[in-house]
Amino acid sequence: MSTPVGQWQPGMDVTAGRLNSMQQAASLLVTNYGADSSGTADAAAGIQLALTVARDLGGAQVIVPPGVYLINQTLRIYGNTRLSLMAGAEFRRNHAGTMLLNGDAGQAFGGYTGHSRITIEGGLWNMRGTTSGLTGSAMCISIGHASDIVIRDLEVRDTPGFHAVEMNSTRHGTISGCQFRGYVDPGGRDFSEAVQVDLAKSSGVYGGFGPYDHTPSEDVLVIGCHFGTSGTAGTTAWPRGVGSHSATITKFHRRVRVIGNSFEGLLQYAVSAYNWEDATIASNAFVDCGSGVRLRTVILSDTEDTKLPDGTQTSASQSMRNLVVSGNTFRSSGAYDDPIVAFGETSGQVLNLTVTGNSISASSGGQNGIRLKQVQRSTVTGNSITGIAGSAISTEDCQNLTIVGNQIHTPGGHGITLVTCEHFTVADNQVMYPGNNGILVQGGNNLHVRGNYLRSPGRANNATWYGIRVSTNASSVSLSGNKTRPNGSGNEAINGLSVTNTCTLIQRHGNDWRGTEFTGGALSDLSTTPNTSASDVT
Image 1: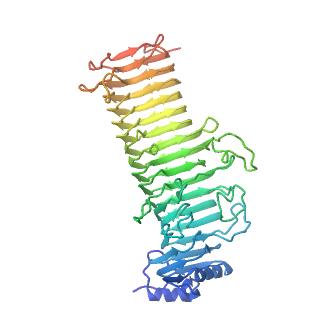
Image 2 (image 1 turned 30 degrees about the horizontal axis):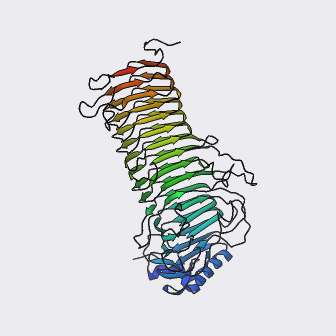
């Protein structure tokens, strides 16, 4: 026997008793305000009337019973409102615009002072992006200048062009247990995110309302959601799952957490952390996506994003810091970009990055497993990387990194690369059966390579690659306790260790390069006066 309740909660059975109890209580049933649930007539006016009554009451729960509701106008939700679509309720968009906004056009609430403390939950939000007259870019749920927003347990289907949910200039926002299925590109929108985290930069960035005071988003949590396809003819999966693609110098999106979601078949970056700080991307599953996680500072070539809030052009990026990518799984990544990529600019680097405990298996199109460029003060540790088309871990123009304790198996390219890097420790990694070099050092200085085990390097071509290769004016490189072994048959590396004659201040001791199958001998160190003693060097 069901118990009458004053408020409907997701998961409750829909019963006459409960509906009657809510009708007697503070909850507002949209059908009592004229909303048609048959799917044959406009329901928006009745729903809006209930939302407006909730506003006038200072807040209330607005209940949408099971049924199909044609939405012929943009709905406006106000502060202290809980909009609940019951099981079996569908909002079916029937106009060429946004489905739901928090507030009115022309309002002037800056910062986080707009309509806040809002919960939106349940139901199917059908954007119908392939329907004639509805194919132009549109938003489903758009939130701006707000705080304390919860969006949960709903499905957004077949969105054209813009975003399923936009958290713009929003603080303390949670999106949980939602399904984002199906996307339609009307042209020129191959970069849209299902969930966009953005700032109030301009009407071109956020069209709902101003003011355009460059307020960023903070404390946003996306948890337990699914991003993928709907199966509707003419749709695809989303280009991107969660991310940002606008920026203003001196502003950051901070404390964004993307946790425990599944991303399947996305065309580009599943998570694009553009100009984020203090962010965590953890325990997500990425399957058949064009790329997994991108961490990107402000793009120098984007002349809009490199402006100050007053419009002054800086012609520079800005550093972003304190980022964690941990415990994620990546399977069958596509050719769009690497499964994990952190990319900075000379004028704005990625700082204080931890990439740990991720499992990456299989990529196509020559992509690397983990790629870092212009990254400082970071750690790559305890990752498992298997069957990558390119290099397993690729670093370029980086400083003060540790690459420790990673398991690498059968990369098509190199195991680990350090290109013009400084102040590195590469230690205790296992690199098994790399197609090219096990570890490649090109240029750079003050590098410590120790305790790594390299098995069967150079499997792609005979007599072409090396176990560890140090070249291109690399300086002050310490190699200790490393072990390299040839395969024993088929394609073999030239040397276990190869150091070219342009390198200086090489110190090596306690390594094991043995293997008669190396085609050029186990060891070739042509550097200037290498130090091979085991005593202190002063």
